[in-house]
Length: 167
Image 1 (cartoon, helix red, strand yellow):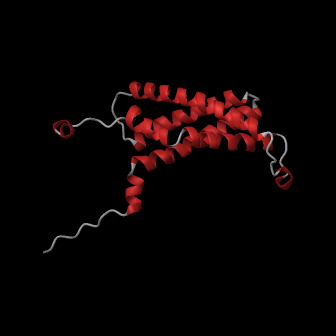
Image 2 (tube, one colour; image 1 turned 90 degrees about the vertical axis):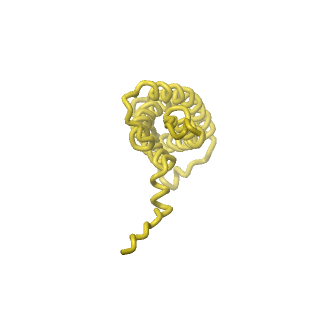
Image 3 (tube, one colour; image 1 turned 180 degrees about the vertical axis):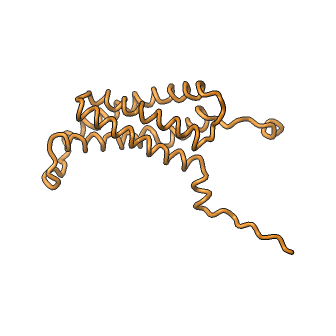
């Protein structure tokens, strides 16, 4: 009897098995947490823009780290502290840059004509739209490609195996 032919995995299944895809999806979840917390702190508790952006970033980053550790990079070792310290160091540097970009974008958005008449936005609603726009642009600038590289090669580096050592 002939053996059954194996069906090659589809491009879509390979796409979703990639650590890059999983990490970007996890990053989107972390960004959602980040933006929600920032909006609450700035608009409801009247924190400053920079502090609100950085606090949201830290909490979203914690969600990002934990989910990336287990879901994207399948890190199930008992060593939790060293990748966490590397992640905290990388995120601390990136959060300062991110916070400054949010402040600069927010300052620049005061001169932009927003469609507030069309949507009847005013007060906190308009400020929330400006903040969210500034945060998303800063997220894309700071946490896209460079952050993926840092995740793969600094925070969760591939483990060396005997096969790799032999070559």
